[in-house]
Image (cartoon, rainbow, N blue to C red; front, side):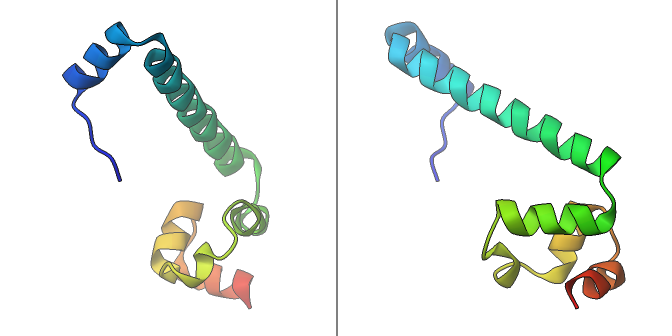
Length: 85
């Protein structure tokens, strides 16, 4: 995990076009991921969201609690248990 202050990030971007490009790509990627997640929450049912989660993040379901996954998917823990059965 890397942490950088806004001021230092701006300084890096002013000094290096490559760093500016890197941070812009990261920001755009985050925006696209966020929009994709919102659309999934709005358009997909619980089963589809769960299957998409498993596809996008293989192996993560074994490392996270059911409560966290249910929260991410916008369903109750009980619903997630039914989906994963």
